[in-house]
Length: 433
Image (cartoon, rainbow, N blue to C red; front, side):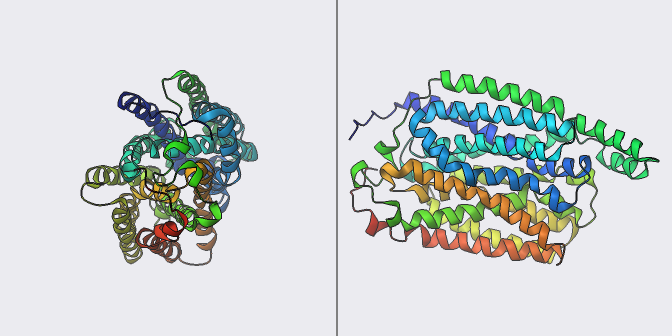
């Protein structure tokens, strides 16, 4: 067995938190551009809701296909170089999306988003276990909450930035396109609108490439997942993954959580448009959800683990999700949209609780287990696509309720019981926490 590297010092931990915080800011900014991008491509490419929602579908499916390869890459490169590689892949994807969106080639734009998702998959597979094992596992939710604040502040800024740079005056443009006297005039308007995305995405690509160099040259220490992996199992005592049912229950929980998070964040504009609310308003609705998430992170940061365990907080959050989903169904217009935005508060501390509970006790399997957990992010592809498909045949509020309430109930099950299934029997090693 390879010798265990010494744990980082408190000073190294603080420096690492800063670097990882920047990465989580990038996660948030890039990920939460998807909501306003749905509005952008729907007009620029003249798409219906089903085709416009290929944006989150392609983006989140990249996690399903590339999380396991990401874990293999990280075993060869280490977490630090792997994070740098992920940023560089994202830069390539951003440049590809910007170019293809500008010339209105939708398959190329989707390919660019898939590449961005591939880079994010590599980053997430490294950064989430890194921050989880940077200290005691029982306070992992608190550390991830700090990262979540960075993530959601960026997520709040993303719709505002793209709204100002690309989507300003979209209602007026939509009316001009519909009233265009000739097909040529219509195409000219749409091409000019699509070209507005070019410079922002090229600038993003350049920034991501620079960040890749910065991360590789940063003081971020390499941490062996084996040395503190989940806080319960020594390297040699880690059981095979087939004997760790709480991991697989956690993967499903994360799948459903990301699905409801994307529904509340990226799909909220489409949900609001179902009430015929104007596009110039709905383009900002994602920011409202993320503001609620930020409030939830701040609450979790104060309460976990001082007042509530991460398991208990997760259970309360899931119960609140059920209540708000029912309230959204029972109301209409802005009141219903407000209930959907408030789901951001319920969702805020779910990832910080689910991820460490899922990888707890994996020992030497932490990297591969984390990859399986990250694969659960594909839920962000499935639930929104089901929503836009089903709402063609049923009332959109009914579809929203039918998708969201069962997902929150499963998260409640995982919080109360699922995270403990088989754990004591599978992990007999003494605690290292």
